[in-house]
Length: 133
Figure (cartoon, rainbow, N blue to C red):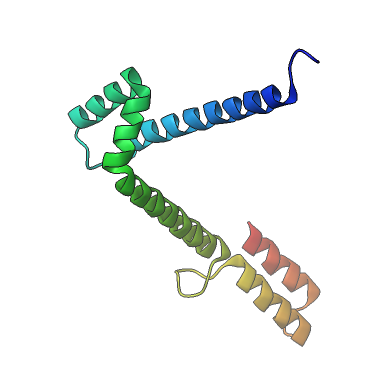
C-alpha cells in the first residue's frame, strides 16, 4: 500500500466520480434530443451526430444552446407525471362526482345500514358479495 499514496486514492475516486457524472450527462443530453418535439428529424440527427462524434464539445454546445429548454422539458414532464398520478389516485379512490360511486363508499353505506338495523347480516353479506364481484 506504500506504492499508492492516499492522495492518489482520492484522485482516483474523484476521476471515477467525474467519469460517471460525464456518462450521466451524456445520456441525459441524448435522451433530451429524442424527447424534444420541437426538433425536426434532421435536427435530432445533427445533434446526435455532434454529441456522439465530438462528445465533450457536442454536449457543451448542446447545454449552451438548449440547456434552458432542456430544463423546461424536465419540469413539464414532472408536472405531467404528477398530474397523471393524481388523476390515477382520484380514479382509483373513486372520488364523488366522477361517474359511478366507488365500492368503498357503497360498502360504507351498507355497513351503516347494517349498523342501523336496516339490513340483516345475511342481506349485508349478499349485498357485499354482489358489490365485490
